Image 1 (cartoon, rainbow, N blue to C red):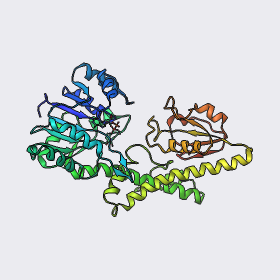
Image 2 (cartoon, rainbow, N blue to C red; image 1 turned 180 degrees about the vertical axis):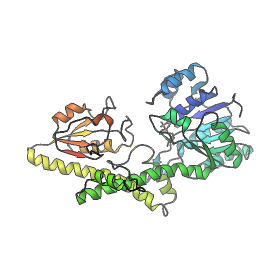
Image 3 (cartoon, rainbow, N blue to C red; image 1 turned 90 degrees about the vertical axis):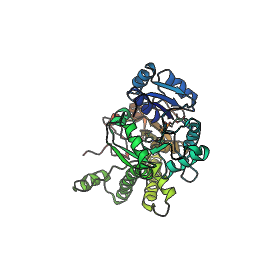
Image 4 (cartoon, rainbow, N blue to C red; image 1 turned 45 degrees about the horizontal axis):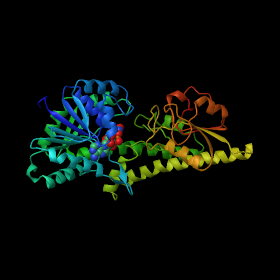
Length: 402
Ligand SMILES: NC(=O)c1ccc[n+]([C@@H]2O[C@H](COP(=O)([O-])OP(=O)(O)OC[C@H]3O[C@@H](n4cnc5c(N)ncnc54)[C@H](O)[C@@H]3O)[C@@H](O)[C@H]2O)c1
């Protein structure tokens, strides 16, 4: 594939911006497109609007070198990549409107031999659906463009490294499209590029996150059973995992984030009769958050009777997983907001976030000193050294000594 190609990348968020910057750092011209003017302004100044280590320096460098430009409109190019959001709507139905809008915006600029790639996490059949939309509007392009689905599997906080080193699954609408996409990703990915068809690649992304969700649901279910059976679930899992073929994950207050808590629904909505386990896992993980709320309220009621007043509850952690600042779909945040709504006196602690618009944040030490009950919701590294002298409910195994 020629190196003087022009890449048009639509959606400059957590996935699109690092991808655009990485491609541009290889001396390939990238035209980034976002409907959010503020994003375009920020990026055009060589700055970033998201928290991601090492990304700021890379964006500054590629903007200064002239290989990366951002705009609110697309233009013609050789490779088009879509990295816009795919949330769910209604009763957990995938919302493809962002992908459709982004694709239709590109359609006027497409020409024969162009490569069109979808990176957004999408339900099975999306690549074909988008191809049909393109051809409906530009029938002369039928059979003349390359169309592929290439999902992303990076870990926030380590995106630049993983974009380069992770294996990728690449599925074209036909073999030529797969080969063309593999040729393109070889320009900046050193991980293995596994070829398949578009439907398998789409399902592969959904299956990876569903696998995590089902396994976390098993651990969460065990935690609720163990509480009733008066068994320490952390010790139980540790012992069960001594079996050479058993590897149970750790329970928590539920499942959050924008991937594991969302993607399994794309399978369930497409295959409701067949996906009973995947749906049950989603329900178990959501129920775990309700169960945690019941446990906290139960403890608060007993303390209220003993103290003769409303107890102060220190909630440690708000992020959706340890050691990050991301609060999207976070069960810990959801729990704190529910407790506040139910008129509990909450001292919320999240050391990775400076402030939060909806309620006040407290530092760990002052919250621990002035509370009556400690609730551990996220196993942040910074909590490992805290000394807790008050009654405690630990929902993520912080206090379990292995
Ligand atoms: N963030 C992750 O860790 C991760 C990992 C794997 C896959 N994904 C998937 O990648 C996709 C993108 O996720 P993200 O986290 O980067 O989202 P994001 O919300 O961070 O960024 C998406 C960007 O797209 C822009 N946008 C929306 N509609 C647009 C349009 N029509 N034209 C141009 N720009 C548009 C938004 O303004 C936003 O800046 C999603 O499908 C997501 O599920 C994300």
